[in-house]
Length: 73
Image 1 (cartoon, rainbow, N blue to C red):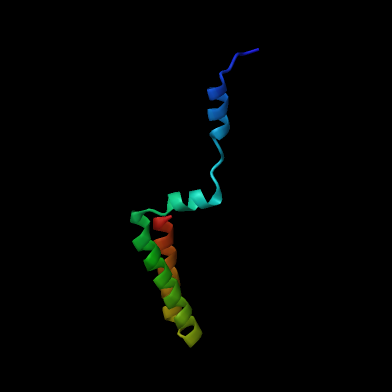
Image 2 (cartoon, rainbow, N blue to C red):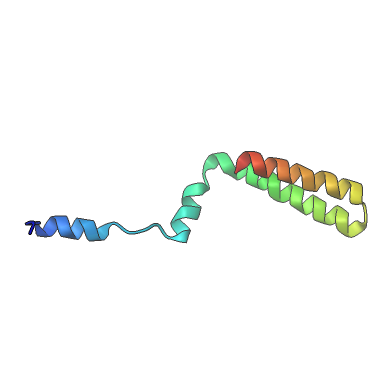
C-alpha cells in the first residue's frame, strides 16, 4: 500500500472535469467575437430575405454564413 500525504490527496480531488459553461467561455475569445457577429448578421439577413420571398438573396446570405462558420469554427 502506498503512503500518500494528505495534501496530495486533496489536490487530486480538486481536479474536476470542465463544465459546459467553462468550455463555452474558453472557446469565445477576442479573435472569434467579430466573426460571430458577422455570422449572426448573415443569418439575420438570410432570414429576412427568406421571409420577404427573395430566395436568391436568402440563399446567398445562408451560404455566406456557412462559409464564415466553417472558417471560424
